[in-house]
Every structure is written in C-alpha cells, then in structure tokens.
Length: 189
Image (cartoon, rainbow, N blue to C red; front, side, top):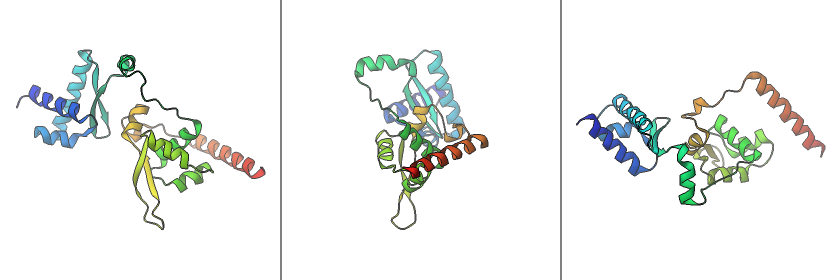
C-alpha cells in the first residue's frame, strides 16, 4: 500500500470517529508500526496547513483527532447560531486546577484544599466535560477519583498534562499563606 492510500485511510478513520484515536490503533489499521504512523499523521497535519484547509490534526497524549481549525470558529458560529459555551467562575477554575495538578483526586481531597464543599463545582466540570470519574478509591465508601479529560487538554491548548505550567516554590509558599489567611478569616466569622 502506498503512503497516499495510507493517509487516505487514516483521514477516513479520524473523520468518521469524530474523537481522538490512539496512535497504536491507527497503526494497526494500516498495518504499520507506531513510529511510521506518527510520521504519516504529522505529514498530514503539515499538508492541511499548507493547503489552507479548514481542518487540522490535533495530537492529544498518544492520540490524534481531526478537528476544525480555530480560525474557522466564526464561520461555525454562523451555522450553529449558539455554540455551546460555558463560563468558568473562580470557584470552577480553582477546582479544575486542583484536579489537573493532583489527579487522580477525590472530592474530599479537593474540599480539604479549598476548605469548602465542592459538589457543585465538580458536577459542573463533569457536565462541561473538563473532568471525569477515573476510578474509585479502595477505602470505606469507595469515593470516586476525578481526573481531567481530553476536552480539558483541547480547551487549554495543551497536548498533555506535562505541558501545564509548573509552580515555583515561591508561588506555592504564597498560596499557602493566602490559604491560611482565608482560613483564619472564615474562623473569625
């Protein structure tokens, strides 16, 4: 099978699936190894860019997904009228940050860090598709573990969690001081 045919197969699979597909599965479809398949996919991405097409390939962890280019958004809005849009409040962002950096994490662990109930925030983030249940703790009550989703990676423009910014020791210390001050204010009430 020639390279063009293999690219056509990969494009058809990615288009039809509509979501990310692991590189390993794509390699199996064209009966090639993962390294060769990744090269083909990256070539396809370059070709889409050069040809000024409305789609691109996005790499998420060890998966690939065909998606619309960001600069085409305004045209999609015209056709869809009201795109799904969600607002991330400070509470949701705090909760999402905790999940992103501490995952897998339980609601109890999030509440311990934030100092307040997180049921609503966790439920909204699950509804928005930014976090999901990733398992259960082997403890009494078997609490749920939460982790981020591919939608989280897409929304924040990162390929993997390793691309999230690292917090410096100074920032961590400042956050601890702020948290202690907030906790003492809540005790005074």
